Image (tube, rainbow, N blue to C red; front, side, top):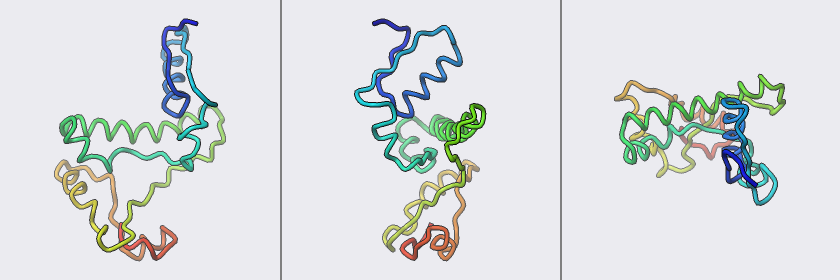
Length: 149
């Protein structure tokens, strides 16, 4: 067997990569090697969540610098939106909703674990998060276990 590109793994990333390669270069010979069924691994067991990398901004900044960290987080945000665009364009009823998500504390020691990240982003005039009142966090989370977010 031979191909121009061989992708190892048929999860979201592998399948998405194959699709994008074929869209960019339709004549490209692309194969995916997957040990099980495509989507049968971690991608198929995540409950359908896709999130950006903004929560990992401090780690990204440490690993690759501030400019690249911002670029990577923005690209991840774009990728999440692109899932919905792709589904719409191809008539895929994936029940896609881009409603946001909650970064919460479920105990007092966890309260404010996001403060350093939010501060670093604010210094760059970036605000990908909205801090909610505690009552709103509990309401949206559907549980009083969520004490802040």
